[in-house]
Length: 302
Image (cartoon, rainbow, N blue to C red):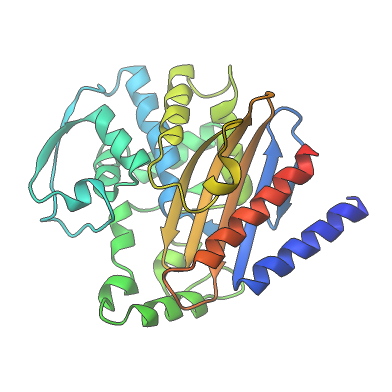
């Protein structure tokens, strides 16, 4: 590691700390394999990032003929216990939707009701088995997305700051946490490196993922609706394509994606963070995580 790289990583760690963040980052050049990161092998709860391997596992079963993309799924709307910002979580009545469109809702709108409908067909254990088959060992799915709606944020709906305080200060140095959804040994969890490994196999053609599966997942990540507030401002431009998925749970804010430049350069990015600040809305945190990821990418590119 060069002295310039050492200084950069030291400066970025200080920037994260000043914003009240702990961060786990990895950026990899998908063509050369060169990479740079900050604690990329720490195991972290992934929240909605797991909807990417979920989509790939479901679409793999479609490609094999085990599932039909036109299969009609009957999904409950607002009458269920699910919550979320968009999609079926806000529907007032049940709806019947084709499997392919449920995959879209789960991935592009980060719809938890849609994701759990997919988990009814392809269990968390099967998704874990699927990613193990791709050679990815540090990404584990243990539960459905409905588990994420049973955190202190829901129990303490009248005092959200208390829930954020518990999330920010209830952890242990080994990755344990008083909130089970933030406990890396009990939650859907993985490392920044595992996330980048997943992105790499999805962007490798030909590769270990069935071509029509990887192409569709790349397309879905390119259509991600709720990806405009974190890394998007620092990676999207007229000369680049940014395809990504976000994940949010209490004080955890994540995003993974691939930036493809007009000149052909491609970089996989994983930015996973946890805040020590007891607030739900943190624009500084989101701007900081984007800036850190961008500087890591710039270091590799230049």
